[in-house]
Length: 431
Ligand code: SF4
Image: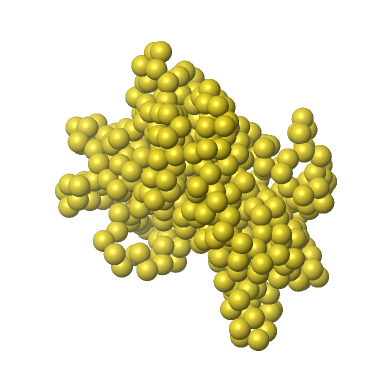
């Protein structure tokens, strides 16, 4: 989806930041998925959940194209369609919503948590889904948990949908008993990555360990003043704030992308937990060495190549840091949809000093800069990839980086390979 605002651009230095990088701020036409896209990976993660998008046919089509082939599988998401009558304010959309939910829950007794997902159309007609969720929860006698959050393109961009979803869960997390402590990893990770991290934390004696989102929405992790939070994804800032309001403490760290990022992430948790850094080095020695060997061949292919990022997933800064520091790539313009300094400060300090960071988007001027630079590879949204490929630029879909397991030591080489593959393909095709 494309959104237009009046176009402007300024350059600023981050206030109170440890990083001296100048940051160009832009406002104007932008092209990115809306927050509904988060359903694509969240419905896989929380196996007992169902996502009911309360929106128009546009939203249904957007889900279908973002989710691709998964729409043909037994889905755990669907769309309650707002018809023209609803949008014209002639019908009571609440009655229709109640009917759809009743039928859905009768047909699918396996649903443990139902998320009502707000969209642009539902927000425009001011359909209050928080109130609807409370009403429906009561009328279904607590058999399912019914929650609402916004995936609307008016409020959220792409990965922010996960943040609003997790934020909706926070008030329902049980209280961590006083005097107990636990570690909570925030942001969805593939199960295989969670298992790898769990094994490492076990060896370090760090636990109990919980993940948000959990694998079953019914198994919500506890939170309280004894909770230490570590972000696994850079787009969970509002959830982190809500958890801190419940007393939890945030551990500042780079994100666990690449060998260096994963090492720093684990060291930061260990330091907060009181574990000696020597033990961390000992525990991670084998997986880090394996990752070094696996990464070496991709470093050879990627070194010296130029990569640019158009703002899309919020992963741009940690990915740019990994590609520059561990793969020897040169960063062109590094665009981010918004800069969340609460989580990104440790990453900013690791970017090369000459990084050109842009926050926000004014699409056409940004595309002109890209065409002038012609980087070897451009990371961008699906909507821009094909037109840019047609212009002879090599692209990588940002969405692929969100739902592929890329965190941790064992995935560092896989992450590099995701960038090497399109370059190899273009080389083989002789472009
Ligand atoms: Fe488009 Fe808004 Fe629906 Fe997203 S929520 S698909 S931006 S209409």
